[in-house]
Image (cartoon, rainbow, N blue to C red):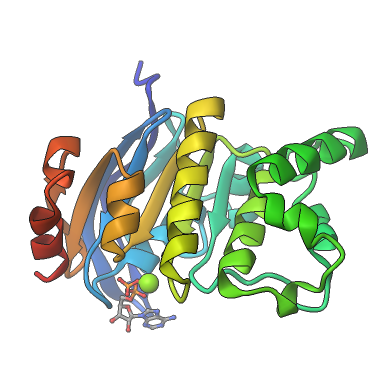
Length: 240
Ligand SMILES: Nc1ncnc2c1ncn2[C@@H]1O[C@H](COP(=O)(O)OP(=O)(O)O)[C@@H](O)[C@H]1O
Ligand SMILES: [Mg+2]
């Protein structure tokens, strides 16, 4: 039926302590797309990501993954269904090595050790810095390296969809470009679907196939690929 739609929200309301932040979000992402959610600080972007992964229950409306409602499912269950989530601030385990951090992401989908080793090799292929630093404690990595590790850890679970919350935050511009390029390559090679929250103009333009503009808990506009080519259009929407 809606086979090509991978992730969808319908009239989604969510918030904290009974107070709404999201006030009727309708999102629809097809398999293999890279979609950005942009908007100023405090408009509800992270709240949307938490609702998609299941850290925040909906007050109204629904979240659908692969055409099935996942409203009642925990974040862990959603991860096992194939949704990977990298939170804002990334959250790697600082005292564990890069390699150990990757292992933590293993077997969310029930795969075994052999599969895990194969995945680590694949991830090292995309993120060579992780192989170089594999025995180093994650806490000693730069922000950009930690972001790559956080993405790698989520890829260890073999997700069909990856949610990234402000991946560029606190990262120097050349590394931001590297990460954007790698995500586009991953998407092209594996067909993985990506939904990411971002305020960084360069990252949005380098990665997104289209983008939703969020303001005060709702989507106020959608920007297609052609309009994304125009820097000013995106800048204007970020400054709403
Ligand atoms: N854990 C929380 N408890 C209460 N209010 C929160 C919490 N997290 C975020 N908020 C509030 O929800 C609103 C949206 O926040 P958030 O989704 O983090 O915005 P964004 O990611 O777009 O910057 C803000 O007003 C913020 O203060
Ligand atoms: Mg946020």
